[in-house]
Length: 374
Image (cartoon, rainbow, N blue to C red; front, side):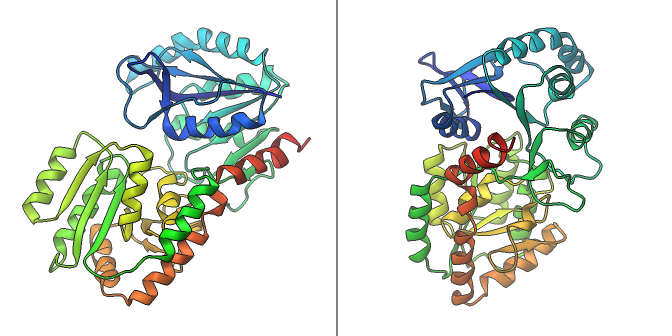
């Protein structure tokens, strides 16, 4: 069986001339390659140097099919998408002739016209993946339109979380981010954990207010003392990084800004950290970084956005509600004064919840619930 994946995933060429793409998506396809004769990935190729989060395809049966860059903000960007429709449809049509099944990853700008195109003009087996917040209120128009079309699909749609009134064809699917070996490694790290001050915290994601970086800094600034804090790791990048660094220096917060890091190095930070912070108000599906941190017994302190609260609760972590710096400050005071036995128990339960985020479990579900379902 041959598979076509259609997405907006960013790809670049590295210094060796190899095509590399956004790490989480490329890693997923590298694992799926074991279940298909060939995989064709139709996605966007950008000029310039790839970010450190990019990975190469490691399997020879994966073929990259490039699209010219489209999308962005503003009226001009929208017209550029419209002008590119014939070329994109032509590339997709040509690729679909080579495969038996397709997956379209949404929401994305090109999804607005690709969902109806695939629905009306193609009878080939396929499914749609909606990676955003399925239950988002006041969603951007493009997201809302795509979600509305997917709700009325005959084909399977995989989504984040379980929701009231969820259509039967919409299957709750966890986004994979771990392999069995890493799960075993997580057991060893979790079993050896201690929770004694001073504590280490970490954040992984885009450095922006919507992701909660400002809330983190403001919460620590409001604490009476930072003596129970060892270090606050910020992993990621963004336009406001210099401002955040300046604020941390001003309040005496021992923060390290690592920028983008390779996956293995991020895992090393999880192993050293007691707590993972993500007080986000951004439109999320379920951020993989939460599951990755939990795998190593790093206790999540997160907001209840989209399906996050369906996986993180009072037994295995802490929910920030409402998601404000004041609420986070009060929660931090409670956490750093908690009994060690309570935190060790939360850490162990956190690790136990991540088996469903393995690539092996994901591949099994695709085979049984999507490919073999008809």
